[in-house]
Image 1 (cartoon, rainbow, N blue to C red):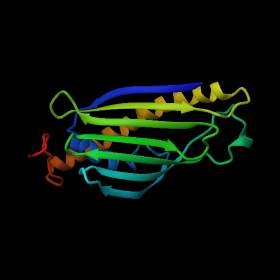
Image 2: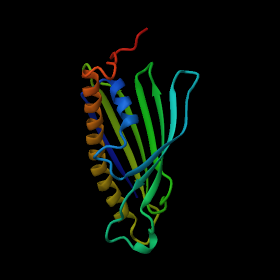
Image 3: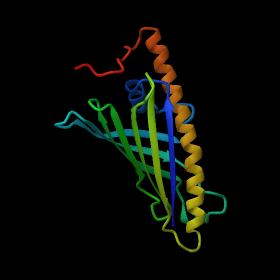
Length: 185
């Protein structure tokens, strides 16, 4: 069986600041599980879309009931692909873990776009959690993954808000430019 997670939320910040915060979000006090982030590829395509591939190393922990012999290392590499379209003012990110995929694979998609209210940005997040472990533990692993994902998503939003506040403070102090909410023609 497969577990799904969906959530929509809004940041009280303009799209440009939210996309900037996405790139600056590590390190932050709510993401101590993130050990390293490296850019593997980044380019602007012929439509003017910024495409980036990053490799993220995260530390996790298995539940106490999970057999220790099957998971010797709780670190996981995650591939993150993103597309930032400044014309449509959308950013789409896709992430998935590269190791431990037989135990559990999580594939997440996020879409950031200008919100309905001025200087807001909405984010729609969807995740698919799948275990191929078997041995009668598949459903239990997926339930653990789904509840853990929801808790980590909450921490990720707190981390983004932390970075967004830092950006706001630097803009107010004149150390970062204010971004216009509408792209200039």
